[in-house]
Image (cartoon, rainbow, N blue to C red; front, side):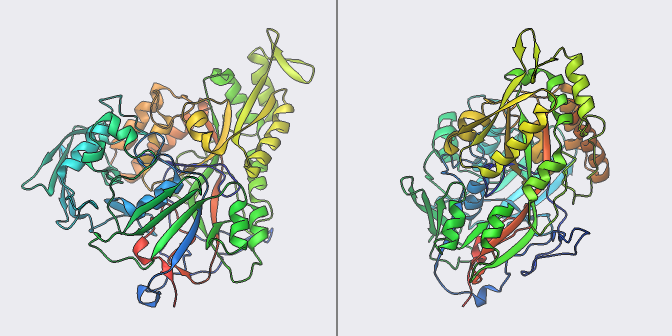
Length: 560
């Protein structure tokens, strides 16, 4: 499974969290826990979504929501498809075999699969019984062939399938038909503890059965879906995606007539919310929060998200030199960056000192010592030893000035502020950092995914499974390691962690992975992103979801 990337905009500073947060059950609104000495509150770890019985909701209505960019690839499993905005919509329109609940635990969605169980541990064998009512929205049944096709596309055996991650699928030996077309038998040749993460979302074999179909069939369109809603219109000119109830849906009927998602850059979504043009908006920077906190006919909800802001390095240019990456890790004061993100928000944001776990996870521990500590003198020594000598304002080696750039999407004011702070911090050790602003819609496809940057900022959005972030740190030219930074020792540790069924033992291995990730200067996590949502008070069962919690679109609507 992949992680989901988020634009580093004011609405969502960009990134993926590697596992779900340790959340308690969902609850109604209110803004949270106790306060620290600064007077700032502790973020709640439970969902605040104005939870209401479906019987108390209106029949019909239009929900208007923002997305941060136009979505060009609707195949989540394709390398360009793992966007948080797209995933939220796909939870309404595509099959997710397991969904993440408010406690961060995977739960079988029986609308699609009536039963899933491990019938053997050696070899690991999982048998699925597909709900006989489950079908694609052209009326064709969901069958074992869809599962087999997804495995063949994502197992890495055919490089023409441009996939985001092969994790888990590459460990499967076979996917075969059971006693009927609705029975699926999956046999692994290596243990995979996160098997519940697989086949979500599931795509139809009829549309993704060849590499060309896999890469192109869902590019700019959704030819086939399966969910309570279907995509009825993609209007790139208006920047809107419209979903409506699918008349072929066999489960609980959704309450809304339609949901319209509107692509809004920068702070345009806040403007639209204040103008009553949309019904909900993410407000996770102080600038945005201050604009909506006193808005009329508005309610603010808060929770802890499964997303974190981070700085990514690429090995394509000057930062192929590991010593430079390590020097930057010591030169950058991540605590200062966390304060930039937190600003005047009423919630305290601390640094995230682990790439794998969020601070609310059971396995979390700080692994920044000795390679990720803020230590200006250590940064200078690394640069001296690497041959970069002080020569005026910036260091030089062999006549070359120590200069690099950080790539951010235009209009991303929060990312620009972070970049400007780092610019000064790196200047203090003799490194020149130039800001490179690029078009929002080009940011991932032309820069991040192919690794065309020195440094960049985006948010990782977690899927709720430990293995979800594995490809971020693994070697190779595919997957989500966009900076192509890794080594074989990390690959081996990740393989051990994924295969370890005991949670405590797996957590210990994941922390070994994290220590190695710091040691090679892969990337710098900054802080976990709070989920602070301002929305229409009548909007129910939607808002500040906890961790990687999935949206139950059949329950989203407006109170009577």
